[in-house]
Amino acid sequence: MGKTITIAIDGPAGAGKSTLARRLAERLGYLYIDTGAMYRAVALWAKRLGIGWDDAARLEQLARESRIELGAGGRVVLNGEDVSEAIREPDISEGASRVSAIPGVRRALVEKQQQMGREASVVMEGRDIGTVVFPQAEVKIYLDATPEERARRRLKDLAARGLPAEFAQVLEEMKRRDERDSTRADSPLRQAPDAVYVDSTGMTEDEVEQALLKIVRERTSNGKEVTN
Image (cartoon, rainbow, N blue to C red):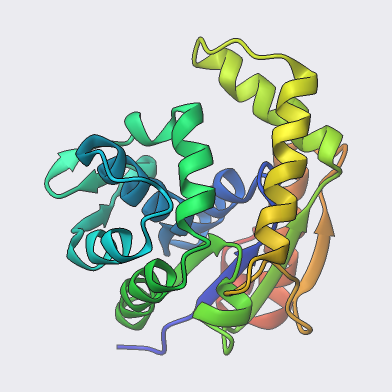
């Protein structure tokens, strides 16, 4: 087996990390790991069990006991059940942000993420991949966009799933989440010193994908083989 490669993509909510990481993984033939989906899965499980999203001890236990499998096309399986759609409900987004601020939950899921990264070449996205989960990743990218741009994208995504929302409300929730993610005591959202900053505001998905592939090509020999 050849050396595995880890591509870490960090950034705030709504920056397009999931979409671009998935596209990049498909292009490179790597495993795509949506770390946010893992926190969403724990939040969903807690909700179903009636466990509050601030119950640190119970949530850490759930995180350690959870069996989370990530499949093709963004499929997420929790304890044998496909929860790909259920974890995308708006209230679960809020729950994931609160659950992810709990140090014990983060430690439990980081262990699972690191194990995945040891077994295969991966594109992993989240908020602390390049700083905490894989600080030695070969490629680190910080994907960003203005809060207004990210709110518009989230609104479009909600509308596509038949979940109407107001722009002002989505923007306010986006700003609150940014504040919570960047100021939490454990593994706050921040750009790794050696990460390449990419502002996707006003860019199409194809344009962002090409920008990310260029970064990969510059930092790994593998990237040179997949951009033609």
